Image (cartoon, rainbow, N blue to C red; front, side, top):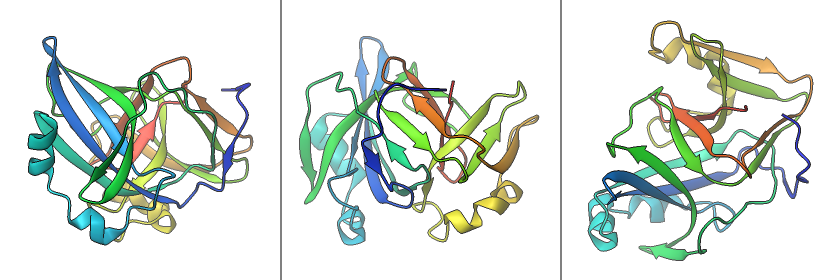
Length: 210
């Protein structure tokens, strides 16, 4: 999908980060706020290991907190982020994070692999021509492109091994995994729309381009 938004950050592929996802009960639904280390620090392992999800949930008044990561980007650049809410910087046991997005979790704070969630992130992701992308394809032919791999579930996960990841996935019936080299730049622009994302069972995350 083409975008008029300029690329402002390059060389993103392989950069490490971590997130805290805090779910709250609001107006009969569940909503999650996402805090991340992106472009603040590279989520040092010793600080990440010190985080206690239950203690963070109690401190924030959240129903539950998910420690999401650490993760490595598998995209190449980013555009301007639209801030749809007040910017918030917060330290979690010494690990500095910024509030990045809001997720509509609907009637349940729990999510499962291969299930779409909708994220108000207001960002533009760029995948370079000539670079590999890794995609989950649903039975209707919709392809979700991996935006970040997770080393929190499997510390040995790396981009070098993503070509064979499909052999390790327990995908729902009709789903497939593929890798390909981009002929043209791929741009995922969610500055004016809500992003659609999902994860596999290793918590690698994917985004729907359209």
